[in-house]
Picture 1 (cartoon, rainbow, N blue to C red):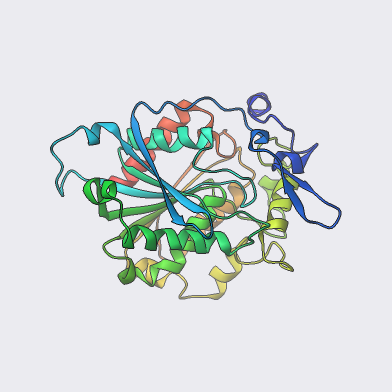
Picture 2: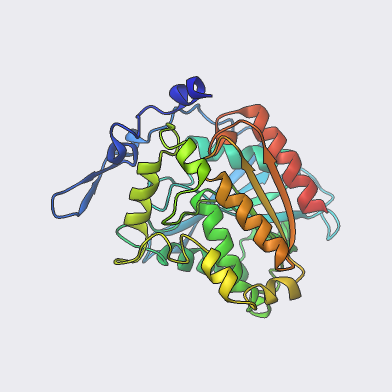
Length: 334
């Protein structure tokens, strides 16, 4: 696994964590963003032949946008009705809230375009503001805004081809964290989002943390995809100023244990939660703990924890990506 990580990670986060994040930190703790070409991962040119994409501005003031990704074969079909419309997945990308990933990042394009073609589904991939320029909860706010935007300003593609009654929120890494927190916030306002009806949450290698280290974090502290020092820096830059890693945005366990009613609306809505992880990810212990706690609270949970792999490995392994598409397809159809 380490050899594969070496091929993927172009910059060793254990040696130069700030360059890995695409930033330079000044002595006054301000940052300068490096050119996008410094993103730390090896990528290939995405194959767009199976999908059609369309970019739309969500909020010009915040410079947030969304990319609609739809299978081309659906566009070429004349048999579109309420029974043939596709489920809608609203996708929040990762990057630890800090890395300047976007809908244009090649490995992200390959990721959600493969999911769209394989499931099949329609994906709306959302860009949100980065930290530390905009610390949490800015990313949560932007992603909640994207749901209201879909409801209030549905593009013709979505109105014609997407089944708004089968909407799922999905995120990878920091996007999985966003999916969890956004899901909790919008569960109680579902009436205001109609005709958008959320049926479930998909937490893919979700990014959580805490002051106390887990065994998997210590075991994989120096891995080259998500090293412990990089995680710490991302939380330092992403959380509200003065917060530590036990803040609920980072470590939801305290809030889950203290608030008996936290998931009431999730259960009332009948939402399902899919938690996906692998034991090559330093975050695996936090993901399994979250899954266990959700089950104890009565939430409908499907968890898939595999051996090997590494954080967000499906971005870089076509076979694992197709396996992930099958898992999501079964979850969405179920």
